[in-house]
Image 1 (spheres, one colour):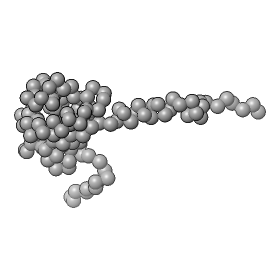
Image 2 (image 1 turned 180 degrees about the horizontal axis):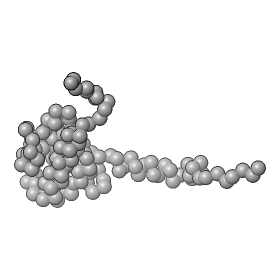
Image 3 (image 1 turned 90 degrees about the vertical axis):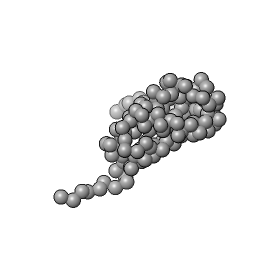
Image 4 (image 1 turned 135 degrees about the vertical axis):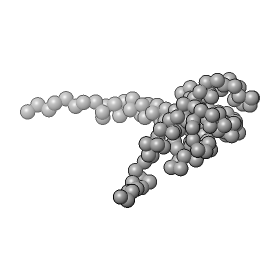
Length: 137
């Protein structure tokens, strides 16, 4: 029986989602220990909000924030510098054929949500969103 590929538009597979979540937990554990030698990462509090896996599981993109706010650029550069060490730490915790390359990106979802919330609270928008009184017949 031939396999049918859902194509790239179908989204990540169950395996991609499962492995990405395992990597997210592994990174969260490493960040919770906070035993970095890099001075730019000293005292760093990082939240790993999501990890996305490539289809071949060789690359993982971790979306990070600093306790609900963006990390300074110096800390993002430092995370990219220590990515090989983090890769080793993840490989010790997640059983994969090959340790994935880790890439880091700012998680801007919270900022975007706050921007939308501010827009919805503007008087002009709130007026348009308010329920309209029933028209009398």
